[in-house]
Length: 282
Image 1 (spheres, rainbow, N blue to C red):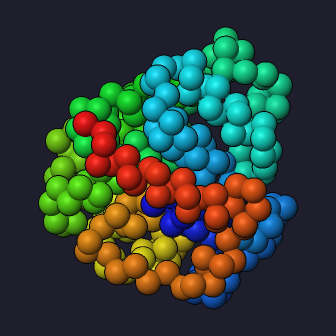
Image 2: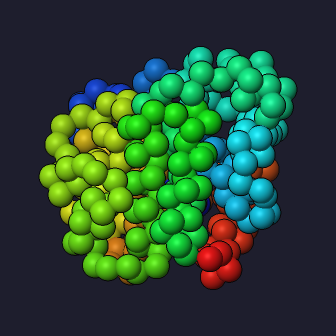
Image 3: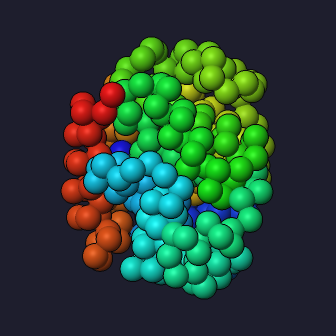
């Protein structure tokens, strides 16, 4: 889950809000590309993956699921490995705060954008839908304590949960999501993806519903244009867990993913522990 999630994030980072011309020309999975404006090195992941790592570490370490502990996880993940990709104001915020307590004291958690959704996918490993929802809501309130911000995060986590535990056929995913998060999940998303969290998750659900291979899924996420790294992060996390999705991502996307201290080797080991926890969580 985490390695595919990171590939979606890193591949999508080269296309985030890029022109339609760049998307049409380069979205063939041939390589990670350099973004025309950002300085992110091709093959490096962004905040989507780093914050997902923080959530995954809290799960596998059995942390108390409290705002204080989760906030400290977010701060720790950033401080040990500062990287581009965060919104500039949130990047500056993480640079200034020293620990979880200061995070909670100074954050303004009033966003309805995609930050809480992009990091929510690992929460889907919990066996109980109620646990997934409760834990996802809590983590979302730290930064996105709005109805849409919370609902977007819950829907992203439930997508992974649905696929991981084979709750039903992929075709019935919209119906499943509608049971817990009201929304037009059965209506395919069309057009560019903006910053709102629910839009990113709707686009990810549309791509997952419409494709049967990971390669086609990734290309479909990027083809929307806009905030496509977040769409790909959410969709590939779920797709990697689906028995209806052929796991055919090109090997060069795995080998080309960054492999520093917190790169693909680290992600593979954390992934093993996270997926193993799926059989332990209740």
